[in-house]
Image (cartoon, rainbow, N blue to C red; front, side):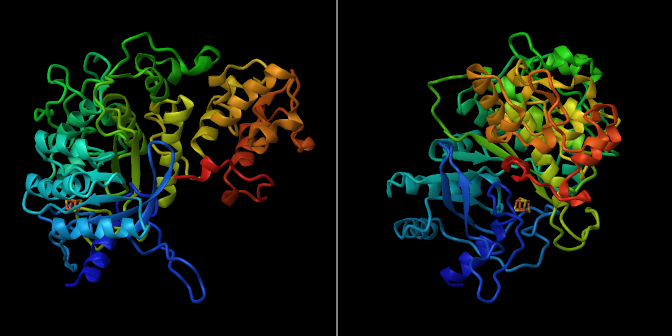
Length: 511
Ligand code: SF4
């Protein structure tokens, strides 16, 4: 097989990893058109400093000793196989870089024999690039589950970002769908990486019930994957003692007293927001503002990420979001990627679906955004009585409809965190509101200039004590007393009779 063929096979095999934004696209070029979203190879990712970089996204090998049912590269799948020699891939990367095709590389691999043998080959590429070739471009390295602590730390030394994929949201599903991967083979390297990046974990609370069981996992046959275990929390040391499925996992709590998001709970008598479990943990947003970091641990500047396959197992959105929240809090994971399960054949271990659940994936990304930038907690977004996100409504509007007692919010006086609870107001527009009102009284008509999506926000706010003009006089301003009608106004355009007159905020459509 020549080099061009290898690139074709191994770039295509890498496209299912959601860590790069082109994953999952099915759009091909048309006659006379430009570009092709369905071809793997070069994709774009955001670097830690905010730059958008072009990456060569490729596998070292798609010959895999493991048999994960959801994966096109699984041992039992009859696909064309190819492998690069490390030196071959180094030359390719350097050549592409010199031609200005790429600014970095996203490098993963099937399991060649065993995890450590595979890591050695991946590291040979990264090490050679950094030392012999003096390559200072961006490197994202995939850590093979089960890799030793030594090799995991070496990956952290050479890479800008590393990732260990969780893949399934519960230990039981992992055992059924990806039987060669064990929870401890995933969480051990994640713990090593968290310590290597200088993350100092918060102290641990007494064990509580496993997240999936606690939230009702929609029929999931087991507990969510484990969190940090007290007593085995040695920084820089892989933990191979993860508890078996069904055992209670300890949860991280902050060193200081947790406070509700921006004072929102002060006004809301919501039982979810006031529950003991919710009060015990900070939101991801709060935890990131106060997280402790060892400044003498400069490894992996862009941190670690992970990916979960959505729809290949029966866990609920509540289970998935709770696990994601725990990963952010306990392992300082920078980003959890949700990858809609792409059916690649019939396997009795998997559900029979015709298409990837992309709408569900999209809602999970929106909920995840609420963790990281809006101060929401998983237990506020979903609960045991509502384990799945509403596909027709964004999660923030859905939360607002269930907490109408919190509204209306007066924009002249609301705290920043309260503003973030208003549908149609995001972090940037909230900051602009806070800044603008210091200079002069706010005017409802000027809100779109501050980035507010007035179509959503107008039902939930007052400005200078007055309700904004809703533009729907026959329904009156107090839609807050009419949640069914309000829900109709907030539905996504695809589910509404009338199209939106105002574009959504960019984040609302972002993955
Ligand atoms: S380890 Fe599993 S997910 Fe990774 S390449 Fe092999 S079969 Fe695919």
